[in-house]
Image (cartoon, rainbow, N blue to C red; front, top):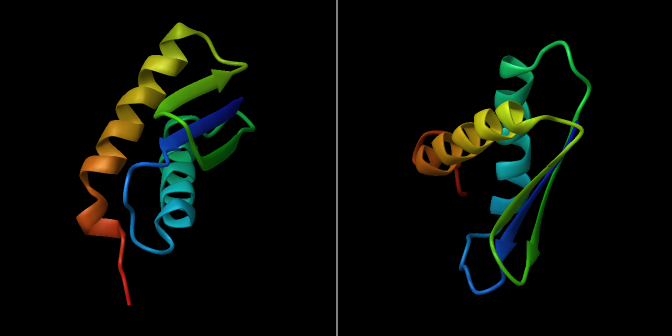
Length: 81
């Protein structure tokens, strides 16, 4: 499964946030889908979007929930220096 998250360029994020989001999202998806190989990509683009390739609607719905939980809990896992 290939998961691609795009974040709108107009969104102001601290330095290192994209890499940290990618790593944390990858960990959480590993826990939910331990039996499947997947890659997670997070990057800036024109708009916010989630693309899940190689997974069905149920998988995309689960990943959408994981992404929302990850984003909302950023204060717990994103540490700035």
